[in-house]
Length: 229
Image (tube, rainbow, N blue to C red):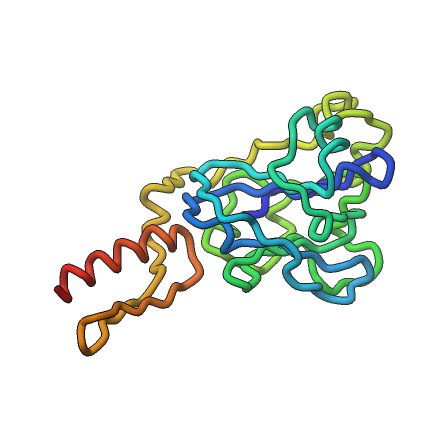
C-alpha cells in the first residue's frame, strides 16, 4: 500500500520518492508497479515502473526514488529502488499503485484543477496510522486518510535538520489499524479459482488480485491435486 510521497527542498525538488508498506507477505513483487499522473491534470499516464520479482515480508517498507545520491544524503538511508519514470514528483502529481496491470490504490486525483488540496510541493504527504483504506485494495483516494505537509521541508539540507520534528518526513512510521494481523487477515482474500481438466492431466488457475495471492493459489493447487489424483 502507498504510505508516503515526498518532493524535497534540494535542487530540482529532490528527493522525490514514494514510500510503500507491505500489509501482507508478497510472494512475487513483480505483480506490482507504480505510475503517476503528470502535473496539469491530464489524467493517468499508466504504469511506468514494475517491481522486480522478489519476495517481500509483511511489515516491510519500500522506498522508490527518482535517484539515489540526493535521497540518501537527505534521508540518511538508501532507497529500495530507483526509477525516475514513476517518481519525478514536483508535488502536484497523483501517484498510482498497480497490481496485475490494474490500479488498486491512489494518492491524489489523476484529473484535477489548479493547486489541488492534496499538493505536497516542497514537502510531503503521509498516510495516517490505523486507517482502513488500502488494506483491501481500494483505488479511491480519501484525503482524510492522509496528513499533507506542503512547504514543511523548505530550507532543510537533511530530513533530520528540519526545524520541527513534526515537519520532517515521517519515514517508516505507518502502523496498520489496531488488531491487524497479516497471518490472519491476509488469509481472507480469495486469490484464485482452479479447475481440473476433463482428462485430469492439467490444473488451470486464474488469479484474482489480492493479498497473498501467490501463497493461496499454491495451496489451492495442492488441494486440487489431492482431489484429482
